[in-house]
Image 1 (cartoon, rainbow, N blue to C red):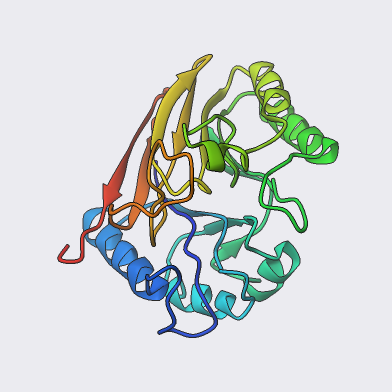
Image 2: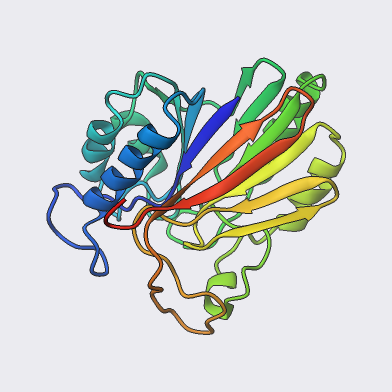
Length: 249
């Protein structure tokens, strides 16, 4: 089963204005077009937060960009989103706003790690309890868990102050469910790929601009827009990679 992840699209209410020097509508469109050429038949799409840049009008742009998706588009909010407005403005197909979705032998889980009025992330007890119940109810499935905020440091001092603040609670919960195979996020505008206790840890760059790696202060990198593909196998193995989309791709 192939999935595609697009994250941190940062769309505005109209095309044209720039976000930190980038026309985010254009860069997202390039990523989607590249993905359609390279991976024409995904099972589902994952949108992992910061879909808009503090502008609820941007959700209409999100809908336009994904209007002709022929597969479910699973959404979760980031710190630049309004969770309630995201669900309201992206209601109905192809958009999906549920915690858990079963695809054959795989369970896809979409967590809300946002904190109202803040940029860091937190998973409240109720969200962790919902996750625990969903994993227990599908203990025969392999699981991919998705959220917005990074649960492990990326190596940028300023950015790592804005990560998930109770990541150890999340990891302790996941360790009780041996079917969990992957943990996927956005937020950091950087790529990361690692392992922890048999769980693949995957941070995905933005479809617009990237943050400079290993920087103590905020800085924009020169790397192009990107998205991630994932291949979830019947035996529970997981393959993945990041596609960097240059302007001439």
